[in-house]
Image (cartoon, rainbow, N blue to C red; front, side, top):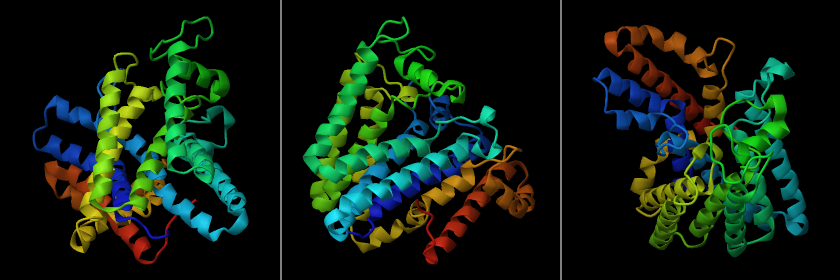
Length: 370
């Protein structure tokens, strides 16, 4: 099945819209209007270690999840069109994609462009987490259907939970969940050395969590591919709600820490991702053509999410993004006329220009893919 699914593209676009300027516009607008309650403004920032999970904390897991959601459609096409040796050609395609995503992740956040190994970070970016999860899920999809995906997803969750809870390390007891003292961070320090970025985020051992999130997406995508319609919405609703309940129960044993993607955090974020996909599937796939047309502005972003991400997340030596260098000369004069509202107007105009650029690419079928 090769057709694009409106709900998946729209959800990817909504996630990218938040990341590439939507959240900034809303935050600046609220500040201009006199501010907002602290609990609301906190939703625009990452939670502190061990703090409550915020909306901003959902952005990265949702990208990983959506990657998985689109995989059943692509792999069905590979399986039917690849002939007898489809796994071999698919494996080469997967490896190429993983390598490119990993290098792009280093370019965005690992200071690869500095060409100075002493300044680089090896593994510290969302694109690299997507590459990890994609690799794990791709191997599973090449050899297993829905039941096998469920089993491997469960094994990833249980394995990571057991490692963090029961494996001692470097003279430390098992089950520590401190910002500077836990098994996942210790593994990163041990294997990355000076190439570790110094943040309390973990990446290597946490590949099990990234794989589980991607498989949650692939399972959800397989349900949409197989059933479609309101039945799928109900199944996704049950799955998402079940994940949230499981996270609440597990939190009594393992804290919800997004920085190291504890199993509790994966179940919590994955549950919300599934529910969001269910809502988008209901609105844009099940409610007729008129509703699906409303998804078009988000699809424009979602179909070229990688281009939007690279333009807004690659920063030069001056600290500004590539897109800021394009948009600022075009909008700063008009934004300056807005007086005290200059900041939100500048951000909104920059975001609008980005959308128009993506629209131009979309209409010319120019999509940046790896």
